[in-house]
Length: 228
Image 1 (spheres, rainbow, N blue to C red):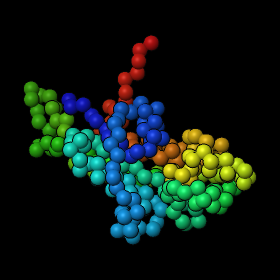
Image 2 (image 1 turned 90 degrees about the horizontal axis):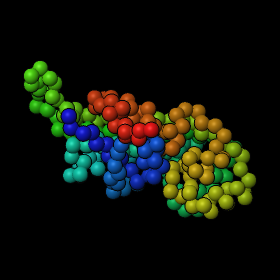
Image 3 (image 1 turned 180 degrees about the horizontal axis):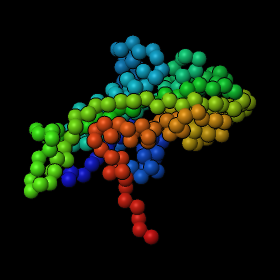
Image 4 (image 1 turned 30 degrees about the horizontal axis):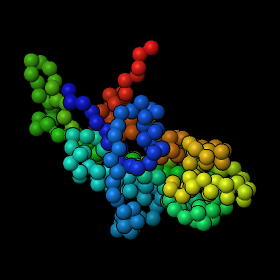
């Protein structure tokens, strides 16, 4: 049977760490998708739809590369929603500060879009080839499937000094919604309503369901555990 290969189409260190911690073998191949251009082209304004659209764009961009041949490609993107407005990456300290002044003591929803593309060769005989009574079909399905995982995020009431200190770490500038749950920002999150992995940026349970659509068991991607 051909060895399964999962490619994560994301530069996020939090996502690759999450997969590694979950024991899922993968490699990383970053797309060059212009997120602003994609959303402008399709005119998407709904935060959840935006997350799914960008996840698909990233997966499709990487799936088109020669390095993705024979692999499963997963694209992810996260968008935070507060009062119906989408919050992507702030990039600038002043933008992040204004967001935190608004988010402090309140709650919103973090939407993480997932898109999986099966780039393995699809067998000519979808029912599988049989030799000596054994099923030798280990090819692809051609699946291209997506899903959104959303979770409510409840923030503590922060002082201006706490906001300034957090902005000074630089952490909020490159993440959707201007916060993380798995690093400095975790101190300011009081509760998560939903899959906490979705707040990190990749829901492992959602990935399991998408892999199932491609007729792949997530257990087949588990890294071997050392003996002892």
